[in-house]
Image (cartoon, rainbow, N blue to C red; front, top):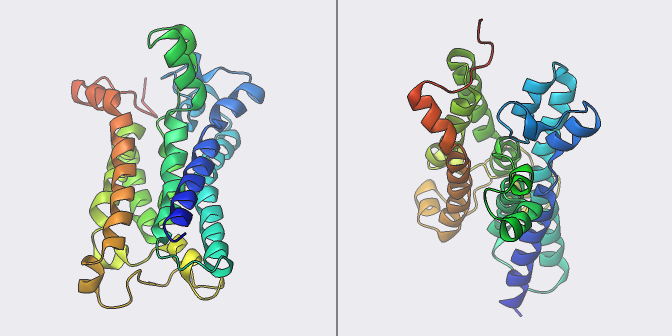
Length: 268
């Protein structure tokens, strides 16, 4: 039973995250509210950045962005509450709260590779127009939701890096790549690695746990924290999440190096 329950919870959290990630809110809002097809404008990407190219209504773009943020954040929160409930009432001694972050990872997977795209890829092939029209996004907004659930302080640092890069470099793609890389780098710093918000929700004695406290996964000093497998599993999930975002921007990286990447607020 002690092995079966964690496995079932892992599968459940992954499914919750993946289903949530399949809803491409920027595309839906663009289609229903702005009457534009994001696959046919700008970069052809069904994300809020491309939506900003198709409409000047900042409120609509912000709404789409926040929807994509919460479709990753909420699955992690729901998974944390489910884990907390099962741990408290099932009678099983659980010690694997790190699996809640898989909900966020699979939400990003669902956003980047939605089920309809996989189906189209299998049935019609890679170069078919139907397949191209059903492709997923690059996962940046969804990644923001993961970062905030993973570590609120880390989200602040990533945002500063993203905003600074966008302001001076005028390239959203470069800003997103650098912000995603931040997770892997800053996640190893003691002050950042200790503040794991959703882990607190899943394991803290009371649901009224302080959001900004450093409730360390391993009770003890920083050195024992790094020597514990829980830290490395959580770090591995966050690292793979950041790596996925970088890989989804492979084409953007090529254009950045060749000087052909799209720039916002470019003077004509």
